[in-house]
Image 1 (cartoon, chains in turn cyan, brown):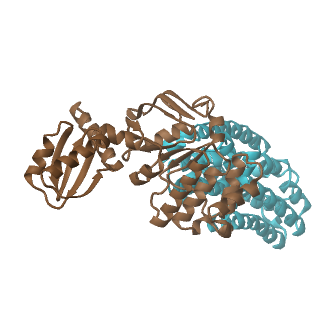
Image 2: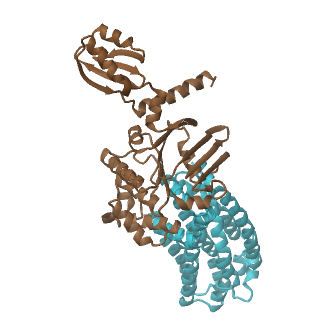
Image 3: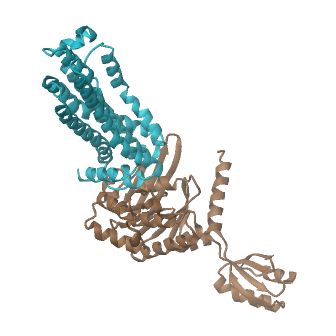
Length: 263
Length: 311
């Protein structure tokens, strides 16, 4: 564990000196948190949305609203689209960090001296994975906390606020988010082992967000809506996928493979 | 210290190291020479437990490669072909990171010690990426020594360095030798190998020769004495050629080259023979074959043998 922590600290000391990575970690969450807060503010200050009819929203969503008024349901509908942004953060940030970290080590040939030390490849991979995943997860949690506080400060319906911080959202942020981070890092490790340009690695690894975008567009199109059941199944599926991806990434992170097959 | 027995490494169909058997004694500077692609780096990687052998055995400091790799890595230091430093981290931070991975006990003291030893203390807070090649190599050497390894593997330590930096690195290696460390040195610089190494191995996928530089000279070349004469007459060549212990005599660039047995005993007889026929001897010396001569002869003979075997 000690060596894992040493590797994580080194990763952070090095990778955050890269301006692109720094700005991604610093500004992306600001934007993704600001958007739903702005939406809350705008929909709250434009008067109630009671003029919004239930026929203007998908039936499956209005069923989720329960006892909310049509205006409150409308506001919840609009803002809940941004839940997926909170699922993007723990994917985008780890991919960026991991891509620059791993490809950077390849191009500067710094891995060999590290591999020559007593550190195990599992410790090395865990250190790099955590160094990439933890900032993404931390920023997501902090961003959500800022969002929750901001939502309370903005004069919105307490019913809407309660729904925006209910178990559905909490499970999304605190369970699914970290699982998405692990998946992203695993994909980034696999892609980075085959590329020599961090930007190419980052762009290819970003393909991992496609399933999430499919969920996003499916929700906008009214095909389905994220509810507790769906989130629970997502969490289970992600846990299994993560186990498989991490096992595969571990195979790629063997000393001989790194030294002889990573090009 | 280092022992291999038929150590072999294949990458698919490519045979990189073929049945290497050698032994390196404690405190020895062992030169490992060979052309590009000969398998030198692969050999170092096996001996430093970075990759595993395909077959054969090797032990380093008594620890078996392939079974006790962690123990080997704790006790050896390696200077890789590329320095492999973290450019954005300071020199001090680079070393501290590796010191932690090597589980060094008093890290600040050890880092300071080696930074001072290599003349980098004043620049300890500067990013390694701002260093010149020579300084980066020095920092990489410091990294290899932090955990006080008994065995050091140096892969091309002076490549791409200017003469002054290369000289400094060679001097440092010589000082490590005086400390009693065992050094396994891969280099293309044959003059450097000749000066530093106790024994050398010439390697090209397989071991071509292994001995001290002087022993290799004696094995591969007849000892030759050079006589500088004021002028050379055909009768001089003829007279020397009659001597029973002379193997070859020829004139080149105004000098007589005489290959003979046991020069220490027979040189006086050659001198007498030349004086008898009126030669004015200005200077006598032995033709010293360079390590380059030895290396090229071995590598070429190996290549020719390979061609003859229908490669």
